Length: 317
Image (tube, rainbow, N blue to C red; front, side, top):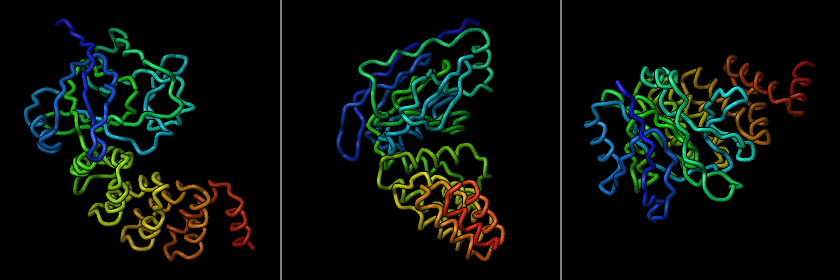
């Protein structure tokens, strides 16, 4: 069977930030057939209609404003040509961005294509070099057997190789609707390594939308599944600028699951040291759960902070 490769770019007209429509740059998509449509009738309804009608493996994607423009989510290649996918990297370090293959390597068709030839080059970036990251991120959903099998997020200016798959590109997506859609994909009782749940939480945390931090905090406090609460605490810590330490320490004190408490201690270690180290010391001093105190002491040791060293000297006297 001959292989057909599409190298098309979507023609996008606009995206929505809050209630105002602003011009959007099209994502740099290669090796994929892109079909664009509006979601003026609502993201949830449009998304469900595409999923239910999708007989073959395909992707659905859209762009929304990103919270942290100092980071870029893309792929990098080393001197040997090996490609890595990174969750985020500082803009100043992202000098070696390459094309990201969005199809999983384990996919049979993709594996055969990669073994037979090099992927087609993505369209070259246009315009002056940016000193800060993209204003938006691309959120992608892989649809298999009429359900979401995978969620991926990339910076808007990252070159993407669609692996010969169709991409349904959605215009006019409101950030709040995106967050609601992602939250709806979080299962009631997923295991800790659930791919869709963890990626959905990450994507929510990256939204430049006031409801993002409130959503993550609510999931960390009250989701019925302990693995979800623990993962939400991790992403809450990545939103340190949102003053999230109160929710994390509340989980350490009040969550009934010891593993969630341990994840919350790890989340404290992800905060800026000026905020996280004093909180870790307080947990190590006062928490009644030995496993939690041990976790706090471990992460204090990893911090190499002078205040942690003073604390260790004090308890060893």
